[in-house]
Image 1 (cartoon, helix red, strand yellow):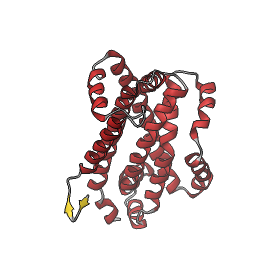
Image 2 (image 1 turned 60 degrees about the vertical axis):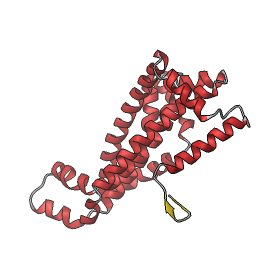
Image 3 (image 1 turned 45 degrees about the vertical axis):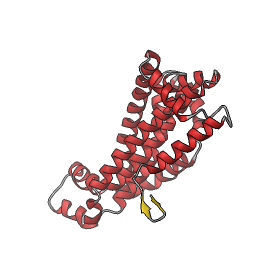
Amino acid sequence: MYLFGYRLPGMSSLILWGLLWEIVGRAKLTFFVPPLSEVIETLFSIIGTPAFQKALLETAYAFSFGVFFAVVIGIVVGILMGKNRLLDELLLPWVNVFLSAPLTALVPVLMVLFGFGMQSIIITTALFAVWIIILNSRAGVKQINRSLVDMANSFGASPMDAFFKIYFWAALPEILGGVRIGIIRAVKGVIIGQLLISIVGFGALFELYSANFLMAHFWAVLIVLFALAFTISEFLAYLERRVSYYAAKR
């Protein structure tokens, strides 16, 4: 970030927005935006409470399993679509439909099929993340140099060897990009699931605080959620940069 020709530290924009948030909160323009200092103070007051820790564990549980299934299914299906033209033509329209469709509308269907428990929340989380992972994995396989595949075949590589030693590693930059975007979408999926399917985890806290107009508590939980999503996203972005040489080798 540059200001008047001077390079500012990377976190300068966050400091600027934090100051603006504090000013708006102190001006009491709306009850919906309390001062940032009050939000941070509230965060430290609730972060050690049993209710917050229980909500964090429930959200982390649903998020972790949802992302795990989305990553495994997304990478495998995406690579298979990139390898097999018939499978690609059969599945690609449906992947594009679900990627662009408002998945929130499917939540009532999941509630009917799988009930109101944690299982439905995990499936909702996976549905939000899996489609972009499939598309990025497919795109990575499509860009693989054909000579790599021919070399594997000439050395007698089995389909499983080619899958894990050629396709996966050569498509890894795009796969990591898809996983990073999928995780961001999964954050929305897990909160929507907790709000609409079963009022648990952070969804329960959002419902409680908004219903009682405890906006400092509401923003404190939201900051925690944003911080977790940002940390995971930046870690995956770091991994993308570390493996970017694979793209050059292709």
